[in-house]
Length: 505
Image: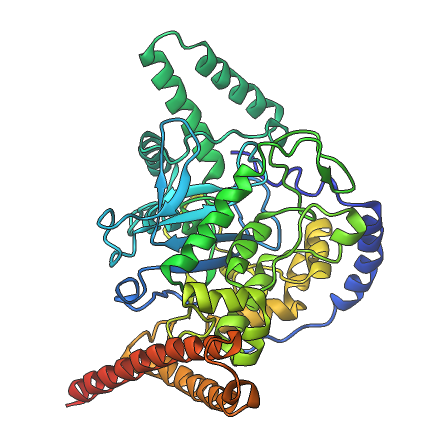
């Protein structure tokens, strides 16, 4: 397949182009200065605890990925890609129609199984949908490859299998992304679909169409490990909170139906289609804004007039750091939650707070037995997967390719992202002692949260407030959630300590 990035920045302004020329002069001066990266590390393996899904039947996995780099053809955008996996979600699939997400019904799926969820991704070439929905963690992450070589032959078998299962049903592509040759091929397939006279012809034409669509989506919407590294944040959700997340996603597609003629990017929207743009509306807007339904991070507006939109750019790496900060780093404050409408509703209606000891980072490694894509960690100047996270550096890497490695070296956010993968909980030393260290880290965060809660309960607003006042009810509900989570954490710490003692004997 031809590279997906041929037209990615066709709408970039002349202002940015001029800035690139000026900046490239500065970059050429910096090129002579060697930036030392001490002890570059490539993590070979990374997994969540084996009982993670059992402990967390509903969770949101937000992932920022490294650059898509095929061995033949042009690389993807330097900033990488954003995807998400929603554990506990299912899809209603009707043959040759777009899937609709919902929470899995009781008994429909084993929620202890890591596979029980749906992978979400947005592609620039999508026309009639904002996102694809791939059921199952294995198809989404690896395409089912467990050691065997990933090559043209094995790729074709995988595409045929997934097409028959309906993973690509209903997705229409925007042909302007294709080369003339691919446009011709796609139009011929569409003609066969529309001209089918028998059920057998129709079935065959749809399968051919879905294989084409799947080949285009490969490595970006599914089988992600074949083309990328993934930096992920896993955040437990309650069922009602997951319902909000799913409702946000489904609403993105519903809003397309009557969007023609609406105010859009400073003009009128020309069609009901999804129209991707690196500045106005991209993959990161989908993944980040879906999680923002929880209130943990702010959404990034889309489709504003250009000058306003430039103040709201979305990058996968930046959102990864924001979500990691909101769920793993920041201390929680009961009064701040009370004053925020989304957080208030999350506590009172969904029984959810941003602090949870099961929130975990994860590095999903590139699949090395691979003849179709490059391992960017082996070819990058830093020894880390190639992903630029700052706007200026991304412009360098995109428009002045010779400076791409320098842009990566000088990207401070990219270095922060790389450091998160060196946490031994998620690296090669993924053992009980490392997990215990993770839980003890959160124990200290709970102590701070409890201290803050006790202070709030001593305040005049709580002590003198009526039992039915919104503040008193909020603090009491928050305390209930916090105590339940803290008790669960202490039990897990006790179990791990006992297991480690037995192992040492």
